Amino acid sequence: MANEKGYNEILNHKGIWERINMNVRCNYCRQSFNLSRDYLVDAVAEATEKKQKYHTVECINCRKAIKVPVVQMKRYAPEAPAEDEG
Ligand SMILES: [Zn+2]
Image (cartoon, rainbow, N blue to C red; front, side):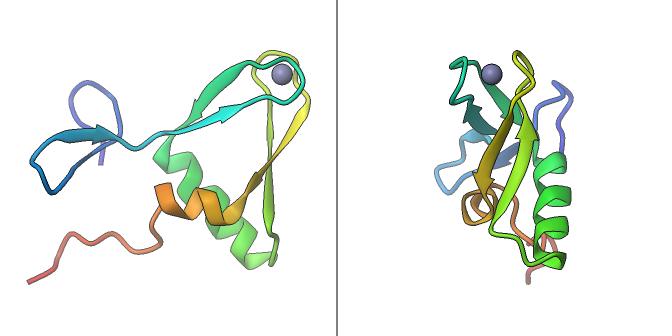
């Protein structure tokens, strides 16, 4: 659900738009970067299929592999979109 600004955001219960990109920090060079919701949805689906507990992302700065817990990614990428409730 990307809005016109190009961000992935959700409308929270207070009526405030929140960005739902997940922030990851590199253990090696301390570079931090965001994983978009679209990326996370794909990554979670793939990890679930392969029964992996971690997903590996490449640091945008030093290109080292960073392990991201799948459980953590799921909080940002719910498996089923809750759009057609009610
Ligand atoms: Zn790095």
